[in-house]
Length: 193
Image 1 (cartoon, helix red, strand yellow):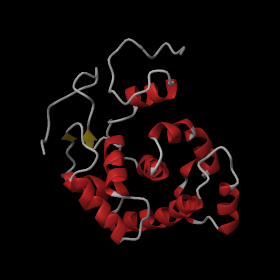
Image 2 (cartoon, rainbow, N blue to C red; image 1 turned 45 degrees about the vertical axis):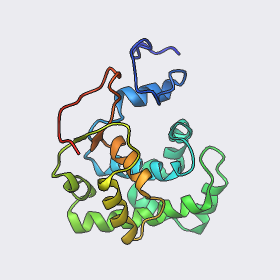
Image 3 (spheres, rainbow, N blue to C red; image 1 turned 60 degrees about the vertical axis):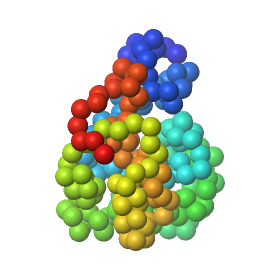
Image 4 (cartoon, rainbow, N blue to C red; image 1 turned 90 degrees about the horizontal axis):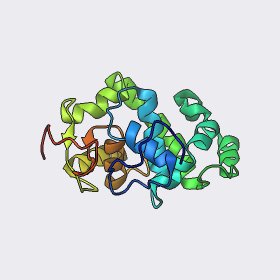
């Protein structure tokens, strides 16, 4: 593990595999940091949906391959994927080649765009659930908030957006701040649930 920006001796969340530099960098520099740009929110939503039944580390290890395969998560491109492109993705050994998840990514992109049109941005839609505040809580895999958002996204037609996936997504985009108490990034202030 050779990265001058990473101090391996710092205490981190128990889920962070210290032997995987990508995972450590993700934990230290991205996870739990509030995201407001729709392009980032879209990428993370798609990646989280591929996590269903797998580990986040598995998805993260393939992230660069996903970016190439999914046209850098360009929403317009993904919305226009046809069956030929879907088959190309199914045959791409660099990503998770689950036909149902790939089809869901295309479907979810279209619904993501509809939400943008309805709310002005997906960011406004998602952050509106907490009045644009961050929730500080640890050691959960779902909550009333993730139940509510998951239910709404499913009602709109999204797939692979169960409450556990959505809770992980909310943590990833910084709406829910969940660093362990012993982690060097731990903060306890904010809205409590």
